[in-house]
Length: 100
Image (cartoon, rainbow, N blue to C red; front, side, top):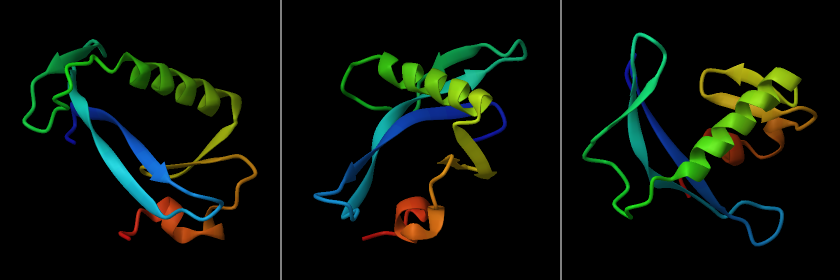
């Protein structure tokens, strides 16, 4: 979001088969990364209001980091990572988030 603020959220994908029908972004939680590299929870107007700490999102972030390190995910461009061996142009709507 900014140089020192991030929002950790998840996408939901509805695919009743191989073709993606809908993509939606679930509200997340916001954090500020301090000078020591530590994440501090901050309150933001767009925070998820469900009351959960969404710890599972951090577990997924850890898996992404390991996958990048192991070469299972490839960095394509800012904000876009693709699993090794997957052709990202097979369905552009799946990777570019075009509205449905």
